[in-house]
Length: 391
Image 1 (cartoon, rainbow, N blue to C red):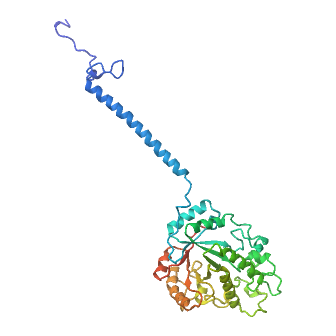
Image 2: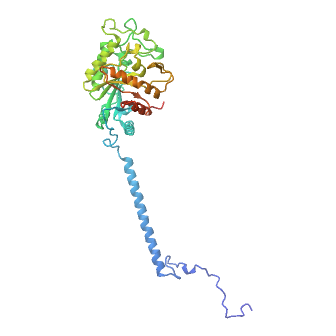
Image 3: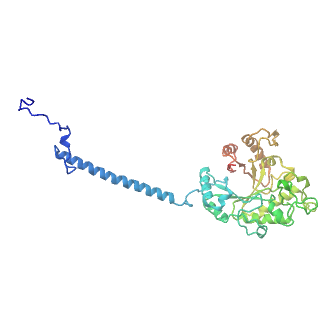
């Protein structure tokens, strides 16, 4: 009874709409409803896919190879860090002392030179502690151990900078030299007895001895260092050409002063003039703080040293603080910021420079790039920029 109409066929329960595309056992060849067009299309797609993979792998390999070569490429010392054009104006950047040894510190500094568009470099070769940053041929320097902390590659590093076109300003501390004052007989400031070495503070407070500007031994030692450094420099900048500073200056005694025909101020001027003579064609700069440059300083110079035998007065603004008190053209410096001080003092310093017989130019020392614009607006294009360091 169930199938009384035997002419009607039952529906197949295994039917699926996609059965015409159902693959055969052979895999990619379709057994049902496959056309020649479909086969060609799939073959073409497979070819495009495999060719694309080849290109992708080739591109990845090429990029990886280029990046690897770049990461291992040495720094080209001949094509990077070339100096900005020198037009008679020194735009100098102070070099960190460790960069004298070469290596990564030197490479980083050269990058900074390029960024700051400098055309000159200030290099400290004689430090305030008396140690030299280079190996000296001066016999006295060897005898007192001044070269024990020297950088072996110092002159090679300076040579590379000069080859790149940078002017070299060599910075030398002079009478502030506790090492030579301790080791070189007859060179130190003493107390009244003429024998006991004087200290600028108590021994408990790590006071230091100073060289005596009247001492021939001290002068000869410094002249030897100055002459030696001048051969590798465009400018020799002399620091601490002065009598000592410190808490105990009232007890300082200077052997030779009583017998000398020169005053304290005169003996310092003579020292600078002799240094300039020894340097020959290498120019001399003399560094003073801004207060002393404007008004002189009785303790340090027994007057003014602004008109010395140096070509440049290197006026140091970096140590100024708003609490410092001195006269800026009749106005107190207390409360001034550095930008205001620069704007107020540069015209006064220009006037003093025009009145000088020997010193012809200003070389301000600053510690912020923002002050460069202040200087340029005042007609000063020479400067030394000291980078701020994290404490």
